[in-house]
Length: 197
Image 1 (cartoon, one colour):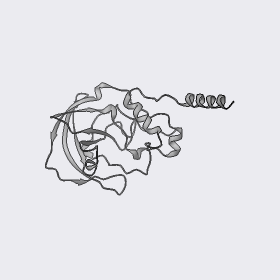
Image 2: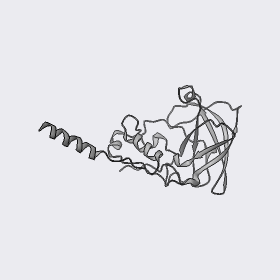
Image 3: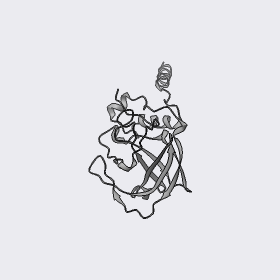
Image 4: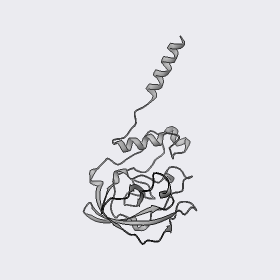
């Protein structure tokens, strides 16, 4: 009797475990992170009703090879955030590329404290704003994480653009995208605006 009860319970739990949503491995990985209480930036209330983030459809047009120019003599500066916190960043380089027949330029940054941590030695931070912000994507812009390039080019995959955590939860302190990182076009790739259900 007990064995049959346990079997029913196990079967029930297995059926409750829904497959991860997402069209790409990256999207599935993000949805898994947002579902997991240990890694999710969502409030507890939102996490309980969360099923999946909404993404633009994957589009290889938004995987671009950018020319990378190192800017070695930049002075560190305090990056404004959504709170009083002002972490120290340095402009690490400039990226130029063509997207949708438009010449684009973005500055890429390094978080001075973060690179001292294990596993982040090569980490670079690319925040940007574009014409989808406030309509289809988060009003404050989005971010890309990347690594130090080995040569003079860098592949940017805007399909992996993500929202700052403060788009989901006000307890987070997020860097404000510098105005010089505005792209005068619609980046219809990556995560969309978060809507609570």
